[in-house]
Structure formats: C-alpha cells, structure tokens
Image (cartoon, rainbow, N blue to C red; front, side, top):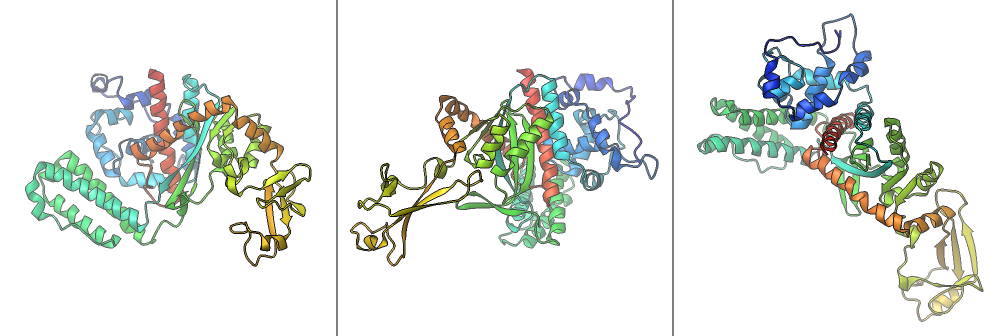
Length: 485
C-alpha cells in the first residue's frame, strides 16, 4: 500500500540545513532543479492504495538509487551515510535527527519489483530534456549519434577482476591505518577460477571485520561493505553460470567484448536526448530512426544529425531526406570510392561502353543485377574472354588459374548516394563533421567517471536500469553546469 507523496517535514532542527548544506551543494542543486513528483506519478499503478502494509515512499527509494549512482557505493553504505551526512538527509527529505531509515535490502526489492515494468530509460531522459528546454540551456536542433559498449558484469573474467579490485582497495585503506596487520590477512589468490577468488575475498572480509577498531573507520567500512556486496552478487550469479542476455560484440575487426551496447543521441549542448540499450552484437546504424523519434518525443526539434559512417546506410539517407534532416555522416568508402586499390582498377571506354583491363583487352558483354530503390545499390558486371586471360602476360593477381570466367563488377551509385557524396564534399559538411568528437568525450565520461564500463547486475533489464540512472545523473550535472555559464 502506498500512502502518498513525500510529506512536509516538521523539525526544530531544519535550520541546520540552511547553515550546513550550502546553496552550491550538488545535492541541493539537484533538489532545486528537479521536481521528483514525476516518480510518484509513474509508479502509482504498481502500488495498492488501500491494501497491505504501508510501502516506503517511491520518491525516497528512487533518490537512494540516484545517490548510489552518483557516489558509486553499496546499498548498505548509501543507507549508513544517510544517517550521518546532512546533505544526503536534505536530498532525501529527512529530518536532521531522523534515525528510522530503510533496510538496505528494500532497495533491491524496489529495483526488481517496482521499476522492472516501467520504461525508466525513456522516462528519465525525457524528464531531463524537458528540464533543459525549460531552463533555456537546450536550444540546438542538432543531435550527435554514437554507440558505446558496456561489458557484462557476470562472466568469469570480469567478475574475478572486479572482486580482486574491490579487495585491493579494501587492503589499501586498512594498510593506510595500520600496515602491521598484513600477517593476519589471507594470501592473495593466483587462481583464475572465480570460486577461488570468492573464497579469498570472504576470508579477507572476515579478517578485516575481526579488527574491531580498524573496521569502524568510515573509509574501511565503505570498502568492506562494497566487497561484501560483490561477493553476494557473484555467489548468487554462479548458480546461473553467466549473464544469459549478454552477447559478443565487436569494437574493431580484431577486438571484441561480451556485454551490451548503448545507442545514444546527444544534443550540441552535450545533453543526451535519446537512448536504446541492446545486446552487444547489434549494429549501430539501424537505430538512427528510433533515436531521432525518441529525441523528438522528448521535446527536441531535430534538423541535423552528426554521425560516423555506420549511420550512412541507404535507409537512413532516405529517412533523413523524408524528414528534411541534414545527415552529416560519411558514406562507407566502399560506396563512395569503391574497394579497389588504384592499381587494380580497369579503365572505362566511354565510346564502347565497356571496361578495358590493364593488358588492353575489352569486355565482351555486361549484365546488371539488383533492383532500383532497394537498400543495396545495383551492380553492373563486365565479362571478359577467359581464353585471352589464360594466355595473358599480366594474368598474375588478375585471373585465377582454372577459373571458367573473368568478370569486373562496378556498383551503380543511386541518386541518393550521388547527392550524399556531393554534400560530403561541401565546406558545410566538413566543418560540422568536426563536432562529432563531442559524443566520444561524453561516452568516455559515462564509462570512466560513472562506472558504465561494466554492468553492475545481470540481464538486459539490469543494464537498462543502470543506463537510465547514469544518463539521468550526467544530464542533470550538465544542465547545472550550463546554467552556471
């Protein structure tokens, strides 16, 4: 049962917030910027209004999850810190003297039971875009597209490395207080097996917990709880072996990752306006239309798209043309220039309408394949006299011995591609394309400053929730930065 929205707090100590939580405090600024009542409105259908025990206020629970995302701490520590940190209490709308806090386990239930059925990703992005427009900091009509990858949390390698990193940070905090306790700790594990790493981390956790004075230091306590949370997650996940939703994706021709992709649209002001989160194997270009539509639904007017060559497919060019949107995306070189090296190209004889090979032999016939107005361009194939090829002094690297035919194919550029090539060569295109770096910098910020390089839980739903909270956080930060400017 849900009682209602957050109530006005009456406390004789409320003035402490005015004294100790300054106006430029980040959490105070978020509270002033965002009206969180939208959380209550969205979650109301998932609660009973008159049955069962009174549920914890959904705005309070949502804010706890935001604090976890902003400060990268465990469920236990975000609750513990809200007991003593006045800026946390102010943000959570708690009285300064409040001691009756939530149980950390209720955060897991809130994520799994309340948030799982709502489209949290679009909801939070749309909210921040609307705030940005209202505050007058989002004015551009350009979106920049790109995709960034996130490694799965639960495969043998990444889970092992994550636990060892948490264990390392814990030992570091303990040694900073008393280095003599090294002898009381278990020997570092050298095995590559996840079960062995979990056993080592459990022993380390117990050893630190037994050091009563040292384990009470706030930094040690935070690192200890962070390690315990990782142990718990990985122990449960071993029962399922690995993240069943994650897939192998490719960053380059010879490098891959196991996990997920976030396809992002970002405004010129570096505010994310749309996102689609998929498994890792999905191609980038196919989400252009959806990202444009999501950005428009959020309240943005789109007149221009900046993107790399992955988004320059024929379908996307046609979509941009229909919407009267400028597509600043370089064509794949195989379309604009062809795949052949200069020395491998044949000469075209305009009078004969045929190609001539480097040895001077002219094609004897030609044939066209493919249909007009399809996603792939038509191809004209020119056929040569194979008997001449067999005897040719320049056949090495040109004619394969034993082959029954010799052909030379040329892609026929559609009018769409011809127009895009012409646009690509313009000064306007070249100037605007240089702005694409902004989204690469944003991807780096998301992954390295906000921990989005590795998923914090398993499954597509888990990474979508993580992405939603992360994007909401960085968008709010960006809005506050732009307001100051």
